[in-house]
Amino acid sequence: MVNKPGSADEKVNFADLSITGGVINSYEALKLAATIKGENVKGKKQHKAKVKAIKKN
Image (cartoon, rainbow, N blue to C red; front, side):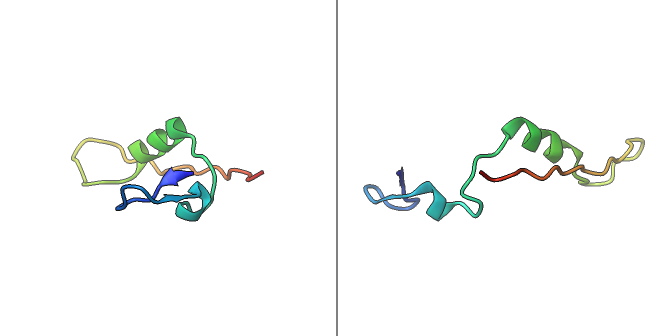
């Protein structure tokens, strides 16, 4: 149980707040975020993001 955002004392299941109900790999999420195309910067090579599917138990 976690605190519901915007309320001080109401508790809800994490799965009710999360689309997947799962846990993320934050290291892989940061690596992916670093590769996403932002503003075009002259002289920098752009890379496409690679996404791996995560199996839900």
